Structures are given as structure tokens and as C-alpha cells.
Amino acid sequence: MTINLEQRHMEPSWQQLKLVKVESTVALWSLAKDYIAGSRLLRFTVVDKDEQKQTASISWSPIKGTMCGANGIVANPPKSGCLSTGAPYGALIGKLGGSSADIPDSSTPTAPYGTKRVFAIGTHCVIALGGSEGGPLYLTMNDSPDGFANHSGDLHVLIEEYGT
Image (cartoon, rainbow, N blue to C red; front, side, top):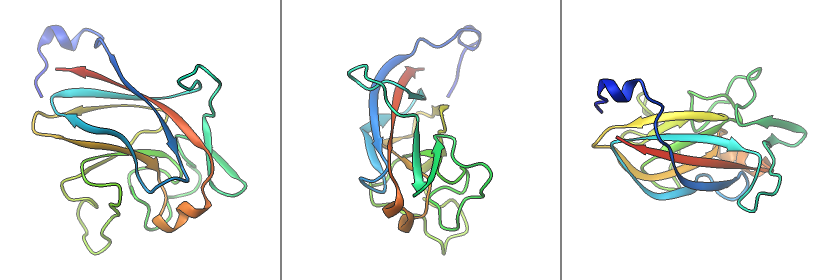
């Protein structure tokens, strides 16, 4: 992705794409957007209001009795078999491409999802998509697939875009 010198010194003019409720108990990956095209910036922000401007939680629980925010539990290393090894246990993560049923292939020592892009979001994240990137956008809590039965809570995430 190329950004000219004038763009480099300006704050992007963000356009709201979607406000998504990520429910930690519903599915392994929650579909946030059917398709995101490349050549753009995406900004993710956990918000404390839902679509009706009602107060929304900014924390969820990966295990009964343990609450954490979207940044996860820093004191605990990610459990073996987490969906993302690049994010703390319980953190909000995203994936571009693939399906709602994707899990890491533990037999492959390279990137866990091959051509799919998995990334940590936390409470705030900006990612750049190249022109050839694109696909469905998914969000979830970072945990091992068998840990999802212990989850509770949800987060509201504002997704914004800036086309380059």
C-alpha cells in the first residue's frame, strides 16, 4: 500500500463501517463483515455503548470467576492451542479470510492459518490491508477451541475504514 507524503501527515478521515456485538459464547469466530476489500486501513475500537446508545460492557470472562478486558490477561501466558499465539489469553482478536470454523493446525509450524490473516485487536487496533488482501472479517476471544464452553459476556466493537 502506498501513502503519499501529504497523507502521511494527516489524520485519516475514518468512515464508520459497522458496530459489532461480539458474543463470546455464540461461536468460535463471529462474523463481523461478509467481505472487506483491500487497499484500506481498518480501525477497531471497543466501545462502552451499544447501537441504542445503552451502556455496554467493556469486559468479558474466559473462565468462570475471571474477568478481563479486550486486552486479555497479561499475567497469564496464552494457553496452548489458543487461536492466536500473538495475543494474550482472553484478548479480542480478528481474522481476515477463511471461515467461521477455522482453527489453527498444530501440525504446521508456520502461520496457523496459512493465507488467512489473524491479528490481535485488544481495545484499539489499526491494520493496513494491501490491494490483494480481502475476505470475510471475523472477531472472537483468544482461547483454545475447547475453552469456549466456559466463556461469558460480550464486547461492542466499532469498526471504521479509510480507503487509500
